[in-house]
Image 1: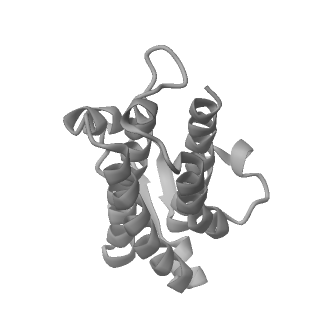
Image 2: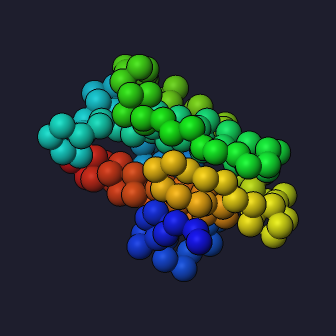
Length: 160
């Protein structure tokens, strides 16, 4: 049995691949013209600033899509968990535009892979020690909802 998809409440009936493809452009439009002071704003006390949020999205392109590639090419793959906050801490400060350029480039590559996947590949499973059984499709849906989750944070920062 597959684990429940994370952020499914945000994704709803939206097409996850379209969400994944659209997110970089939505973020680029939102942050256009931001200076370093604006990138350093947070949506709440003790929360990541805008640059850190986009850096986190770039890290997830590395971490989660590496997992997709392992699931597709390795039978019996078991996910190695990582601490996203620790990854962000390692690379803070990173300029927001650098994080965005990295996220955008990686996402383009990963969406191309995503669009090539067959139903059989989407159904391939692995075990995540903290979540349980997940599939490639589960990862895609979760990442799309995750995009929407963090897009809300960036929109809150933009409204400040």
